[in-house]
Length: 337
Image (cartoon, rainbow, N blue to C red; front, side, top):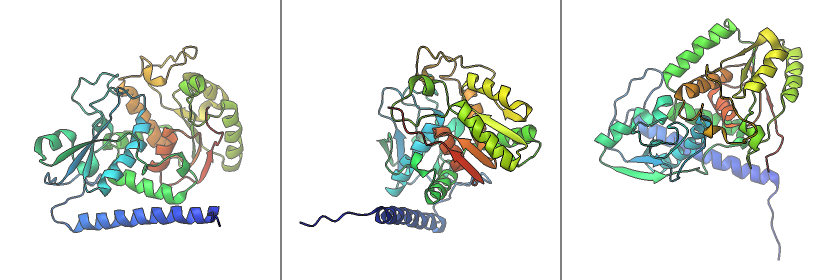
């Protein structure tokens, strides 16, 4: 019996063929929406739209007792859920109000939808109005769709461009955060475009080493790469994004006045000895103000000309929000076991 195996080039061809097919289906859908008089696509640029509640709506929830995911993890995971139900002919609406999570401090008694604090729903709808006005509503659970982006897209420009389009079209960030990030960028860097962005994860990643998550570089490893890239590009500033107060202090001492950062007035005070996930930190869970600063950090990071980063939810979203980085240093150090 002859066994036929596919080489890596064939696998790559099939993979790209699948992506091309998805893009073609998406294009057909957009053309249909554009030409259908009953549908008015939401525009995050001019914020003008007319909503029609006669369509099929999929309200997407979580079937879990609680979730320790952070803001950026919800963002890129929900991308896959959105695409999955758009392909099925629904207008998807994300609902984070029905399960305990970091936004509601693991208390889901509030009827407010945390998702809509930070992001627009697809096509400009809202959970509240869909429940009130729509007649054709179905409820679905979506934990992690196979169609969503993952850490394997960092070195794949086709996938990056695809998911950048999805992010911009279906789940744009609220304009108040975009505007605030633009103001802070000008304030921090005096309109300079020659800024190196750095994202480094610490706290629970270092203490807990969560199984299956990418290993993080040490500050010393990052310092060496900053020095090498700075020698080539002579940056005006460095912009640091980190949740770890101890790591931030090391960067301040090492890089001095060229280092810029934005942090919350309230410190996390993470206890490395207890080795708890960051979501359980009493100073963080339910702290919407902290999360607003976090999303502004990611937006500013996406505007830097070059980037040094570990693989995390934050760096993945920064990549999707960016218009492309000139130089990228990404650490591939394996996964925690």
